[in-house]
Structure formats: structure tokens, C-alpha cells
Amino acid sequence: MFTSFLIKYAEIGVKGKNRYLFEDALVRQIRHALHKCDGTFQVHKSQGRIYVDALSAFDFDETVERLQTVFGISGICPVMTVEDQGFEQLGKDVISYMAETYGDKKLTFKVAARRARKNYPMDSMEINMEMGGVILDAFPEMRVDVHDPDVYLHIEIREKIHIYSTIIPGLGGMPVGTGGKGMLLLSGGIDSPAAGYMIAKRGVKIDAVYFHAPPYTSERAKQKVIDLAKQLSRYTGPVYLHVINFTDIQLYIYDKCPHDELTIIMRRYMMRIAELIAEETECLGLITGESIGQVASQTMHSLAVTNEVCTLPVYRPLIGMDKQEIVEIAEKIGTYETSILPYEDCCTIFVAKHPVTKPNAGVIRRHEQNLKDKIEELVKTALETKELIVVE
Ligand code: ATP
Ligand code: MG
Image 1 (cartoon, helix red, strand yellow):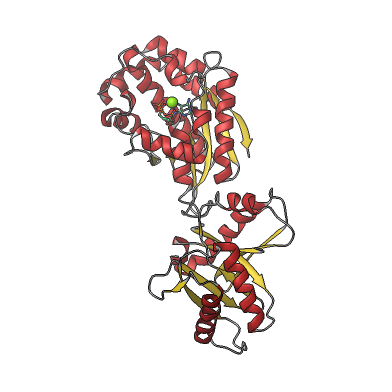
Image 2 (cartoon, rainbow, N blue to C red; image 1 turned 90 degrees about the vertical axis):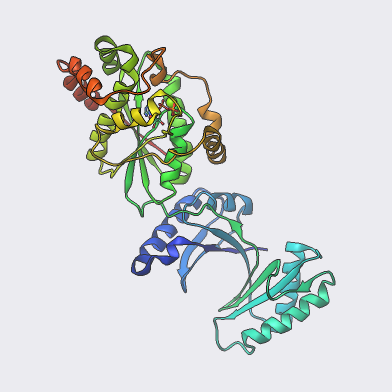
């Protein structure tokens, strides 16, 4: 019955002069999301709206599911399109639309006609009245309510006639690519994929960096991160994943620094290296999955000490969330099952029994002096041997 979708977008509607940039980005993202679906689609802008027209047979559920991965879409309206063959035929079409969509449910409705083609012989008020009557005759359980109806039945008279009433919720947010690019520190945990999702939702393109510590972390742990990047890419588009071999740096820190400060010093080196890659790849900020108080390295004190090594802004979209709220996001975006696979994580391999929870920046800086002989060389080597994996 449905041959196209009207795409509703919320925030990008209010971008003034730049609106077309957002719309074009949205059209691009929709095309990208649909290119692997069964069926051929035409995605186009018309009179301030975005339409997805099916040009062949297509799988309705699959298509909707795909559209529900595109940031910037607030709602997806399946549209029945019919030829203009006079009002009587339109009445029949509307009845079959209502029967198919609602059966003869007890509900209230309002017809909202729009005459975009002015040579149609009835104006929108007349269409509303007449069509209301047609529906009431056909469905005795239904009632008209012009103030707060259950169903708004849209009838748009264009070259053809478009009929729609249901809105399937979209993800909201902004089209990816309209908000610059960020470097996500992606581990195998629950939090960082959720953090990447949250930032991408605001239109930011995501690159990622993973710190790998073979042989302490296995190939399977790395594969898990690749899998997570892949799941994220459903929403963000292709992810450039930089894999850094962190083993030598970690061992060196282990060798030279107090063990209760290992995690915090290691985190500082992760941030420094991530920032170097971010600058090289034109990312405008770093993104982590930290949340205040979740672990010792995420107290306000620890975050302050981690943060001081960065000059780029560090975005922490989960900062005020409880674990359960983060788990809900991870479940929604499909990363949770992968994240809980029990492979070792380079942050946990060398953790102290009693990590500092209130590190002092001065003390940490002093202890990092113990690394001065070799650390620059190790960071340089880590960057030179970095592996780039394009995940899509
Ligand atoms: P996650 O669930 O994202 O692993 P976490 O609760 O385990 O987070 P930490 O291990 O303290 O927290 O890591 C904090 C943040 O640092 C992570 O959210 C992630 O952004 C980054 N991070 C930690 N380990 C790595 C790693 N091996 N590679 C890349 N980023 C990492
Ligand atoms: Mg972790």
C-alpha cells in the first residue's frame, strides 16, 4: 500500500540560512542508510520536505528500520500515493487506507487536507468536510474531533495525492557530518560506544582510537572493539579506527611509576596520544565514556588530572549518567551484548589494588618525570606503528 515516506525533521528545520546544508546532509545520510536495503529508492527534497520514494518493490520493515538509524529524522510517515481520479475515487482510496491502517477501531480523527495544486476543484475546507463525512459513513465507530484527535489524516493534493496519518518515531538529533569530527577513545567496555553514539547524534562524525596491549590483551579483545565500531557505524557511517600498540608504554609506566598511580598516568598517555592523532586527522575534540565517580580514575579529582594534559576539548556525554542509564543506551543501540563479552581490557591488566582516587596533579607530574628517558621515543614508535582499520 505504501510507496513513499515523508521524512520529518525537527531541529534542522530551524537553522535559518544554512537550512539547506542540513537538509542536503540528511538526504545524503538517508541515501547511505538505504543503499544496502532491498529495493531502489529516490530520496529528494520537495517544497521544504524530504521524501523517500520507492521505485521498486521494497521491504517495508527493513526500510523503516534503516531510516531509524539516521540522525536528524524525528519522524517517518509512510505515505500512500494515489492518482487523482476524482473525489469519489479518492473517497474509496481513503476508506481502504483507513481500513488497512486502523480497521474499524473506536477512535477520533480529523482530516487535514492541503491543496498544493490549486487547480483541484475543491478547497481544503471542502475536502476536510466531505472526506470527514465519507469516513464517518464507512466506519461507524469513528468520531470527528477537531481539537485533539487520535488520528490526523493528511491528504495532500499535489500532482498525485498523498495520504498519511501515522508517524513512526525517528532518532532525532542532527545529520552526521554537520557538526565537525571528534576522536572517540573506544575501549571494549559498555560506556565508550554509548558516548560515541551520543556525540554522533549531534551531527558529529566519529573517528576512533583503541589502545591495544598485546599479548596482555588478545586478538579477540581487539576484534571486539572492531565489532563495536561496526555496530556504531550503523548510525555514524564508516568509522576510521586507529589501533595503537600500547604495551611498551604501559610496561614502562609499570616499571617506573608508583603502582597506585598507574591507571591515572596511563590515562594521561592515552589522552596525549589520542590528541596527537586527533590533530593529524582534523578532529575538533576527544570523546570518552567517563562518568563521575564510576571508578577511581573518574572522580572529579582524577578527571581534572587526566584533563590537564589535553588542549582540545574533551567531550564526556555520559558524565552525569548512572550505569543503568548507560546500559539502556547500549542496549538500544545494540552494543551491549558485545561489550559484556569477557575479554581483558588494557585498563584492567595492570590495575593497582588501591588506585588513588584523589590524585594530586603536581605529584603525578613529578612521577611522570621518571619516564623522561624513553617515553617520547615510545610515543613516537606507537604513532608510527599505528594500524588504521576502516570499519563500515
Ligand atoms: P568503558 O566502558 O568505555 O570501557 P570504563 O567504565 O571501563 O569505560 P575506564 O576503563 O576508566 O572506564 O575508561 C574510561 C574511558 O577511557 C573509556 O570510556 C574510553 O573512552 C577510554 N578508554 C579506556 N580504555 C581504553 C582503551 N583501551 N582504548 C581506548 N580508549 C580507552
Ligand atoms: Mg573499560
